[in-house]
Amino acid sequence: MSITIVYTIATLSVIGTSAAVILFFVAQKFKVFEDPRIDEVEEALPSANCGGCGYAGCRAFAEACVKADSLSDLNCPVGGNETMGSVASILGLEAVKKDPRVAYIRCNGTCDHRPKTSSFDGATTCAISSSVYSGESNCEYGCLGHGDCYDACDFDAIDLRAGMGVPLILDDKCVACGACVDACPKSLIELRKKFPKNRKIVVSCMNEAKGGVARKACKVACIGCSKCEKECKFDAITIVNNLAFIDSDKCKLCRKCVSVCPTSAITELNFPPRKIKVEDKQECSTAK
Image (cartoon, rainbow, N blue to C red):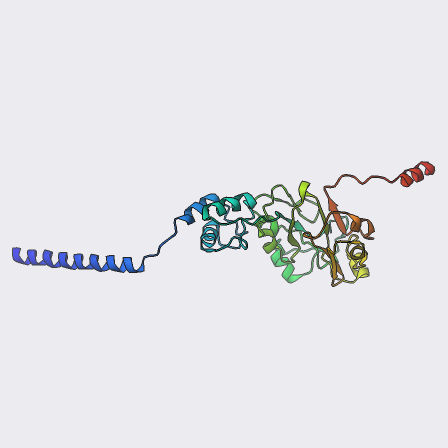
């Protein structure tokens, strides 16, 4: 009996040793080398894991940075130029400075401007309601106001503004991750160049209907009259499908387009009050 036990132990020992040796060589052959710089780059990132960079989290973005020969096509919107500078320093590459972006909802169809003509009793999400009806007003292009963008934002950068019908994006909190852009089923939200003091000039309308129809649905709808396009000296405005669009990368914030818009569809934000011309003051005095 004792000899049998010895043979059994010896056999199991040989099998175990053989298996260990085989596993060692297999592990060596198929082991995956991970560049230690990936950890360094990931540590330099803000750990938001928002996906705004186009990758599935900061780890995946760090791996992409390490593998890249250039950082020109890579950007962390949350960390901005400072973070990308740190990443470039770690990798021995050159950081490409990019203009910061901020999200904006291209709809000014609040309850005052866009009368409610119907009510929806279904699920209060933009994704569901947009698939079954055009909205509670006559503008089928406008914001539904249910807050899918609010739910998608992880940075508390969106205010639903009760009773307004259109959410508001808080520029100081927005990191341009793009989550709200993806969440809007009507494609009303875009990432625009962020100017100093959060100033912006935007056509706050996405209505592609012809002028009369658009204006009837919303008081501040764009009617595609082209006056703003003709006024702009920087080729920053284009008219497509009865709708004006201002390219924030070309816009110089001169505000001339705002003055010629007959429907106030162009929104100017965070600018100082316009100065009253001398002749306007005289006319006011005469009127008194």
